[in-house]
Length: 250
Ligand SMILES: N#C/C(=C\c1ccncc1)C(=O)NCc1ccccc1
Image (cartoon, rainbow, N blue to C red):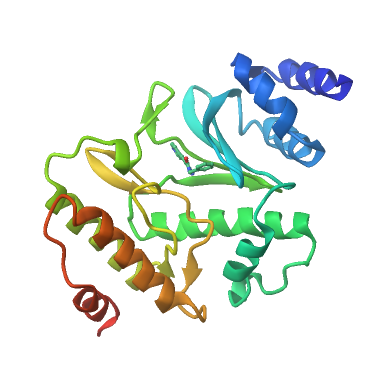
């Protein structure tokens, strides 16, 4: 509609190019009013200088390639309409950091975006390979782009791995550091949420919970079971009970 033309003109004047034809198509059904405002604010703050094509599209969010002064960005935009409202509340309720969240759908999505930012920051501070969070506004999260020349690193499930045993142990090390140092449980660890390029990277931390969350240990067991299920196809895996004991143990 005409508001998009206005938006395009305005961000064009700010030197932001909608670089990619299918961004326009995706934009039409993705960029609702709230998203446009957030995008405009991030552009105004010079945090985005170019917007590229979609990297991932899902029912909860879309991730676009972006740039700031020639450096790659991942621009994650949480959808306000179709987000899985119920599932999100399970992760937020019980997390003291977000207990004051308004019951509105928009309020929930904004809290979720902020939560992913703070979880990524904690993972990054603990030295865990994950996208460095750069900024957030409303339902948009800017983070470091993990990839080369606008191509994101592949998900582990699509990657070529030489030594599965080594990668398995490396990821268990991340889970342990996430638990002991970042005081977080990923809560959705799988071959879909790990990127791989010479080493594994954790992504998608929106649902990660603090250790005081009532379901933290249940989520941890599920994460370990998921890893073992996937890696058992390629290498020997450790006993889940043992892993949890060493992880949670003193
Ligand atoms: N964060 C993130 C992601 C990639 C990414 C790539 C390169 N650098 C940083 C992040 C990503 O695809 N997440 C999964 C996802 C999100 C939204 C819809 C479907 C699937």
